[in-house]
Image 1 (cartoon, rainbow, N blue to C red):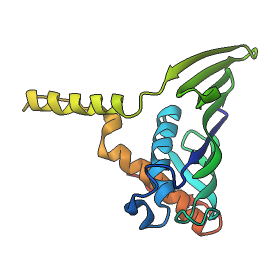
Image 2: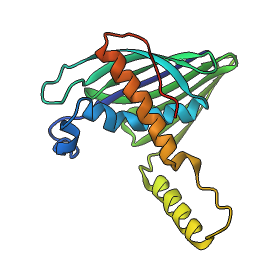
Image 3: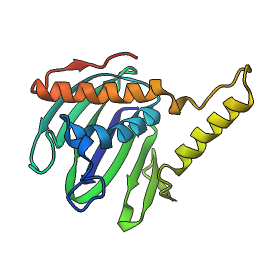
Length: 199
């Protein structure tokens, strides 16, 4: 890996069904945390290692949303690679992009490609040739299936050596939140570099 980019332009506004939930408004970074944790989880899964430090700038532009509602951050991975995580909570042109640039090519995952509800995954090889595949959006259905499978397997195999899906563990969720907290802390400190808590 040479560079990683995650760009999230959300569509949170008063017509969005999640907009009216009071708990997202009751603390700083409510929508950033609620929406961002999913993209941070995707980032961590995609790169296969942990983020060790971040530097971020945050702002509050849309006054109907709790602050901050925009962030731009630079992060450093434990493998030495760096990248950017950018999030706009309320954009007029929603888009989500994950991009990993490597020495042998580039992987790009784009949501909402040409108005379709799903992900376009493109792999550019070292010669610039591109192979793309589209995957329809499945939402949380697959996550729920894995969760219920783990619960039922654990119930059926009491006393055995059951190993649950590690991505669904509370530790992984806590790591995602710790990274977002570091980003928000750096933003509140005008971009000062912050080490991500090890969990």
